[in-house]
Image (cartoon, rainbow, N blue to C red; front, side, top):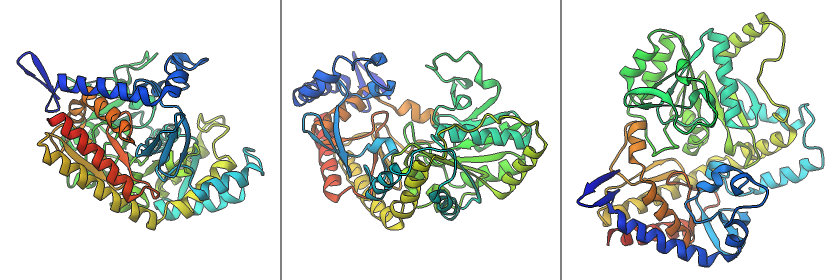
Length: 460
């Protein structure tokens, strides 16, 4: 959020020159502390396009990627021996800590039994029941990523409704599902800026409205041509936006009235509590998706169906032309996934662990808010269970457009690097911080202290 102030720019309430000075100074500190990382990643890693194995590794605001030596519990150690309290936790992939002991044991045990063979294992028998009990839906399928799970669930929605359109909320995150890659610009739907190699007008089959805008949602569903509304319970991948009171009740009512299925994507909001936001707040989705942390860091995802949706899909399958459905991948539902999911669901994703996460997340949110108030910064803090975010703009935010405009990339980058130099790592794409079952009160205290010090520097 920038405004003009004479010849200077103000970003998030801070003079842009001060932000640039802080980032330059912190970048130099970062370099001096990491000569091995700089030597091995600073000019790109040989053999990889853009010098990294995955393009988003260049999106970290640090001068070059940190070369990780090891990650244990909620701590990362880099190649230069620097230790970081890890609140990024694989941007939710390691939400329950790095290599939880039950998951590590399951990996070692399954490695001696074979890693993939396209047939169910003993663990598969247990996982089906665990998914029913924890998330409340009766029928499940296993995929490798939440993107896959969302894509397959949307196929089911189109199959059973006979409709070709979906509806997504502006600013929502559903992995790299093509039809969700739309945005609102100047009041009109457009393909999301920056898409590579996309030649289709995705808005032909995707409707998009703002989160929390019930009149717009009602109008978009009125034609009864939308197969499915796909949504996060809380917008999370931009600046965090909470649902306004009554929003989810109205969303469910409107989808039922128009014969539209409702898909709840809990890939991030599983931080809310055991069973996710859906169980905590009594949502009633027709389809449910969870990826990232469900197998303790091993790539896996799940998608579930309500009784009615499964019955309709079974009827569709009985009547459709035989042949490949276009859903599923060879490595989906492999025994390593089942072994690690069983360990996660039984021994890691427990009520006791969530209670610990909730308690420390509350302390973190309060500490960050106190620092913001102390230095009179026009920022705010949001929290969904174990997920905490500071936002460099006034709040709360009401929709995706407001979340997009609240981003302050230069300011956020400076804060991120300064936190790394004080021994704290947070998510690179936004200001998200996660509390895991193995995060300690001391780590939270250090994060609050580091944030407070950086806030003081910026506000001086």
